[in-house]
Image (cartoon, rainbow, N blue to C red; front, side, top):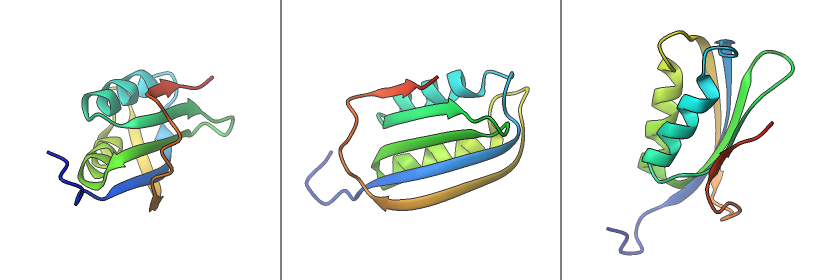
Length: 97
């Protein structure tokens, strides 16, 4: 599939709303892995969830699109996504504590 023309990106996201205590990180992990992305997701002390994901732009966009919905018990108020070039910093996608 990758003929060298696929743009690899990094997206740094911050998700706000009722996103802690609703399995948001575990579901983000599953989504990112199913999309073949690398990076991490973690809870932040202000009640938000932060993530960094790297991979093909379309797959990273699919993850951000999912983040706007989240898992069933979540209520997403906003998703801030900052895009940049992939840095190839991660071997897999993980939950950071």
